[in-house]
Length: 135
Image 1: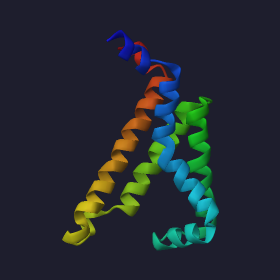
Image 2: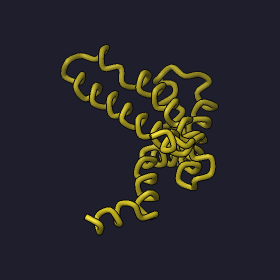
Image 3: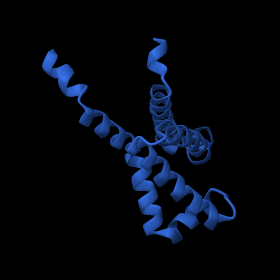
Image 4: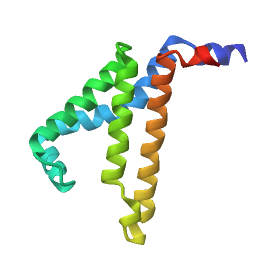
């Protein structure tokens, strides 16, 4: 038990966990930056205008907030920013209640997976803002 506790409380484990939590945002931001025309088209598909500035802001948020989280500098701020972004993205991109039954389950899974990420980000912010002191 002590070996397991030692492994899971090692500093590298926290770094790995934070990197995993940010993986979707890092991949999304890098992918959008590499295919900016595709990112603009995605913004248009979701009815966001003006599409190019929204795409730039999305890339900056995904990459910048992830870097805050992974680096530890204002980690709570990056986590809250990505939590808010993810709530908006879930309601914008995964409206399972409006999807026909063959695709409804996939959209519902994506919607609730987004909420899992929100929960993880809220835990990061809670921890960084001293949440452990109250328990």
